[in-house]
Length: 398
Ligand code: FCB
Image (cartoon, rainbow, N blue to C red; front, side):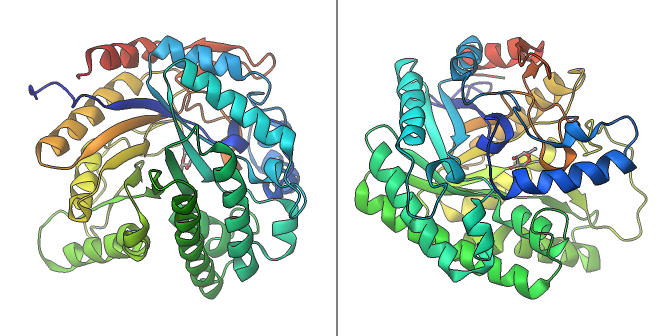
């Protein structure tokens, strides 16, 4: 491999999730958005309540050909998206044939365009009946997630090789059950621990369900790993960084290690744990998130110990005016390449996101898309970074 090239083959792709782009879904999030929108519009300057309601979103449910056109324009050879549980199983035990047909049609179209699907089974919202039985606090939900997985994997087994069972268990649990910020807005360490336990069980069960249906399937989850840094490589700050990483980055992955064919990595954050040092001014995204490309190399190298293929299942930034995206993308990819040279088996990179979309409690204002989406017409328009990413993909180098 020359110093600028990526391995060949390499999966170049983009990521999205169902609730954020499909539009018109009914689940625990869509219901919760109503009260969040009222609160946000009271407290946030310049935003309407409707900015916090997913509503029609990008209408990807009906406009998937437009999404495929965007993917083709980029020249990606892979696409990560999620299946919406509440569409497939709106009522417990009753699987919706039209919904699964729509996903099948979509995946067939991806395949016709030589785009490998990476399918996420659960990217946060739950059907209303799951919410009503206690969500992930209920052991029953683990069993129900297995039946849902059984149905989806049976239907899609001939079309899908790469499966991501669950998205970012750490973020979901901490936001929804510890910090009380997302539905169901619990603030309990005991409930958080129970949810984590059930998510571990759900992942393991889903792994075995899929493997029984297709022994060749490649299965992982998407872990949200943070680069915790300390200025000096010794002392209390170093210890804090190590402990934070053990708890946040390693704990979940270690518990599911025997049931993962690959590691899915989502990288967004660097946190300096130094107690006494002032913060350096660094570039930030429209959400105020620090842009720290170096961190990606650190978190990748930490994954080497698993000795498994790694896919970067999410990485990107909110940048409406596309001011920093080119720089951030290129710098980050240089660090990916350096990690590969250091022996991490990175086999793919999925940029978050293909489209501007509904960014959870922050609504529509953060613009993560390579393609801008008009809020009124849903028209997709390439930002300049599309050409940057396209060139990287074409040349397989940065
Ligand atoms: C990740 C989520 C994804 C998106 C990005 C910005 O934590 O998995 O859905 O919201 O952040």
